[in-house]
Amino acid sequence: MSFNWPFVLLALLVLPLLVAGYLWFLRRRRRQAVSYSSVALIRTAAPRRAAWKRHVPFALLLTSLACLTAAAARPQVDMDVPVAGSSVILALDVSGSMCATDVDPNRLSAAQAAVRTFIQGQDPSTRIGLVVFAGYAQLAVAPTTERSDLLSAIDQLTTGRGTTIGAAILRAVDAIAQINPDVRPADDGVGSSGPTAGDDAAPTPSAAATPAPSAGAPGSYAPEIVVLLTDGANTAGISPVDAAKQAAARGVRVYPIGFGTDNPTRMVCTAQQLGGSRFGDRGPGMFGGQGPGGRNFLVADDATLRQVAATTGGTFFSASNAGQLQDVLKDLPRHVQVQQQHVEVSVGLAGLAAVLVLLCAWAAVRWTAFPN
Image (cartoon, rainbow, N blue to C red; front, side, top):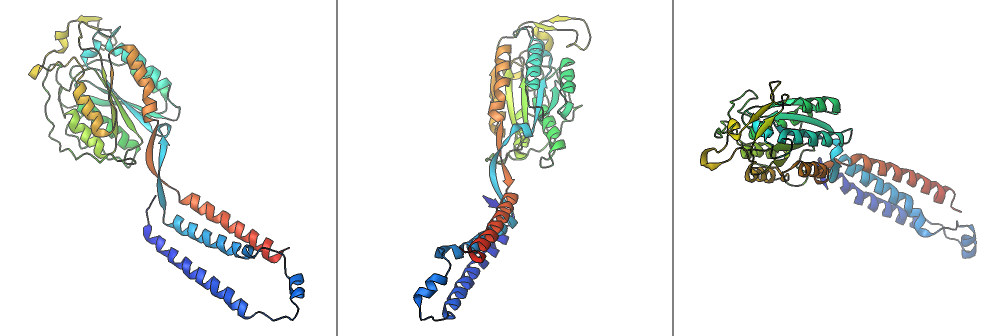
């Protein structure tokens, strides 16, 4: 337990003085007692009660004063807070490689189906936001409890060239900052209309300074989380690890999901996924392949995603088919359903003090005014 105003606890030093005054008062009463020649007469006239009962009202009053003092110091305890009271930001990769058919019917269609099921299965009070990213990253739906807006946006996803994973993380942090004043917006050098590159482009460093990661101690996390689904590697903008450091500095956890197999072949996009153009059947070369250093940008960069999760305090998941993706999203709430937060308990202590005062009054009336 910690206290926001610990100096108030100095008032507890008054309690020993009250005890000393009470004992002095009792001793003074004994000295003023009247002597009687008949002890039997005294026993007959005296009320029949246990000696300790006359001290109970004072003890209750003293305890209530201690509770009120502690409440005034604004105590806080670490408690588990349900995720239903927070928000989830979904960051979805819509790069051209999501049309790969190594996941039936293609990666994007499978992801859309899994995300729909995930959204519909969440608690109605949980706010969900949607960030989409390809060669750019943008907030498609601000955190909301309106499921229809989210499902409509999921159904209308279209693909683009490039994969800006780092920018997507920062967009998600900004979305959380809009609803949680304790989370600062990202220090982002790459705007939503920033540089765009193809899937075969080399990653470029960000000019933005990156804060040091937070300690990640229990209780330091924001209640909102980011679930990031991607099937490739970062091709432009700030690196995912640098973006993760910014998220960690703000207490935002990222749960990355690496999607797809290690052997993507044909790229088959629906007309909707191509933005309304004709049905496309394209080879891997249309969306890039091997990049500098032999990095295949059509395969999820699991090593980087693991580092993102470790930096932010999240968990990395891998799914190579639609069934595994469904299982990952279904299992996700069990990983993040509670998180520790500082919760002030002043009201509870004040309520306890009020109850003790009432008990003090009852005991004083019951055992003093009507002792028998």
